Length: 409
Image 1 (cartoon, rainbow, N blue to C red):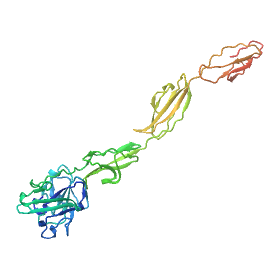
Image 2 (cartoon, rainbow, N blue to C red):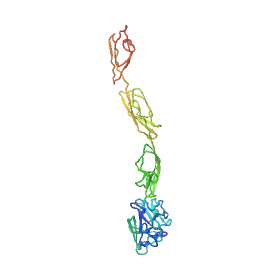
Image 3 (cartoon, rainbow, N blue to C red):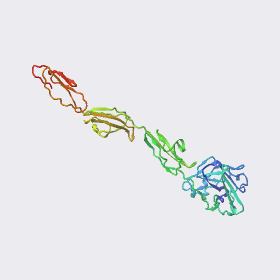
Image 4 (tube, rainbow, N blue to C red):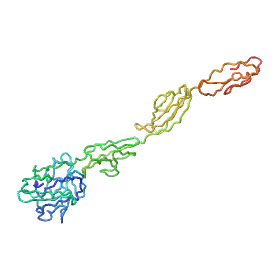
């Protein structure tokens, strides 16, 4: 700003585009020698012998921007940001309207010389001669600001754009500049309850940088968690993002991890057709249980809840079912376990037929089954025939010699 509004020597400034970013302690401004006069209060800023220093800027000099941020030396400015360097301390309040630069909520950083100038840092037009000011960052990244006094328009608000050497005057508003960064805006994040673990999603919001992440402390402090990290214990987190010092946003929320319920492993069972089958589940207190059955031929439905009670079917052949039971507490499901129920068909025996034998004759009865290999037990209603009252396996005996014909069943 060559011809400042208000008290000119107090209200001049330079708008700096941060490029790849820099530390404010490295800002250097070497005025034209014609503007270094009348005492050390008009010296260069942060360069050459006895320079003026840097201090936090006076944001009250500018209106129309909600996110003007005063910074002093030693602050890291992010890439592609806008810094306003006030060439004198003591700027007048509300001298300029900056709404065209940052009225949408963009972040603009303001830093000031420590010296209160008594003369202008930039000579107005109307005279003769060339004026040259050098801007640099730590001796590098040099920008030369050179203009011919005869080319400078008159009037408060006159500015120069050094990259193309043009002048303009829009009155007491911000000169044209590239768009500064918007303040990050993180959406509110509700508390989360998860079963066993929780995977952090991308930080929700607008105007976020690639560095948006989660932290255990406020303002990007504590342990950092990136989106995609897995949380396994209850924790309070802060979603945080920053576009520079003071140009940040955060949202606090809590992740509550509920341990998944467990179910004790049921034993495998083998039962006969027609037998009552009971399976009682146990595990975490308060857990409920759901189960699935991959073989309904055993007489059990394909799925159900709670303990299992049913009567085994009578299949033609042995049937084996895999039963998978899953514990749950509310919406939190635990790890399923699987066991088997085996149902054997009811055994059958072929009718051996009636026999008539003479006294003293050997008697043999061989049992057989149409399927499987069952064992056999028998009872005899009349031991007088020479056979015991009961036994097992095939029958072999010698017929007795009763006085009269005798029948045993």
